[in-house]
Amino acid sequence: MPPPSSATAPQRGRDLCHLAFRQTLDLLRVTDGALEELCTECPQPRGLDTLVIRALNEMALGERAEGTRAPSHVFLIHGPAPTYTGILYHLEKSGYQAVTGALPVPVEAFVFTGAGNDGVTLSNPEDEGVSGNEYQRRFPPQLLRALGSEVHNYIAYRIAGDWAGALVALNYPGRATRYEAQVLSALAITLGSLWTLTARISQVEESFLYLVGALARASEVNDEVTGDHIVRVSRCAELLARKVGCSPEQARVIGYSAELHDVGKLHTPGHILRKPGPLTAPEEEVMRQHTVQGERIIGTSPRLQVARRIAGKHHENWDGSGYPRGLAGTEIPLEARVVKVVDVYDALRSQRPYKPPLSHEEACQVMQRGDGRTDPAKHFDPDILAAFREIHEEFRRIHVEILPWP
Image 1 (cartoon, rainbow, N blue to C red):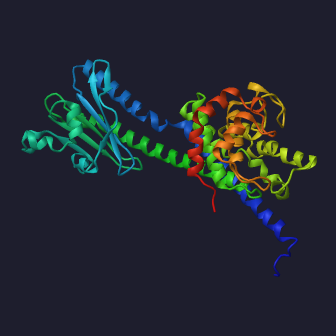
Image 2 (image 1 turned 60 degrees about the horizontal axis):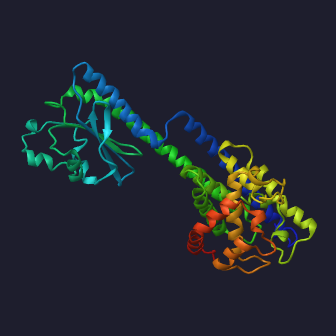
């Protein structure tokens, strides 16, 4: 087959880029659907310790009410290998309460867990014929300091899986017995299952975020900007969102969603995006359509609604003079107002076919006083602009760290 002619080769290349883009978007939607389904059916990793302690409380307080026994302390160890941390809990009248924050647990400390064939260690020093000092050397020094006393006995379950760890019950009254080991076994098995499941959810989340980035990079195929612009906008948007009062989780979502702010440019002809001079009125109208196209591309997936609002509304202006709908003030979603400030700053700092890049100081001056094209008093939310003034040096740092690709 002869090679494509010069007239057809660009179109063929564009078609291939569109195909790759659509495939990436399909993967993103599938991943998003899988993550949404999993997250509605199981707890998130942040809540697992709470669930475990609640179960221990029900078990310990219920048994104590019947005159049976419970350990004075529980040491809950978990983490992806080889980095483990443990939190020590003390049994009080109201239940187990945390004595420490996360303590680093060296891998060698696991010698005191899982010695049995079934992954269970039931230990009383008198049964093993060891001295008190020798017995204490099994345990991490930071654990002993937190206990404030010696360990008299313990039962430990070593939990394998994607998110490994151990459940260690310390200092039963008198001796630790096989009965107490059986009581804890179901909890340890359940705990291992939950940790494995939440590790898999984290992997799906990582895939989701990777595909958001891939989709954003695909959308820049016809533009002069490259992936560094996407990363800078994402980082700065998260930073600015936190500064204006968003929670860390809200700011994180705004950050990764901001990567898709210009996704609609996939449908903007390359000759318009790369034009070295001013656009004509018809060309400007075509360019403005990338906001509406972005909304259509992103669609209605619940996980991507912040990204959809950013893509469709980050060119709206505070005074209502923006596009595509002429929204004003708080009619414009907060996330779009945040990305508006970030996108203008990064555009000023970046080289374009029609202009050289500005320094940080020059860009800040434009953000404060305007330049004929940018009018801060009309274009920006004043509170968000004030927040930018307070943290503009962080924007400089991010721009230096994430330089344009060669």
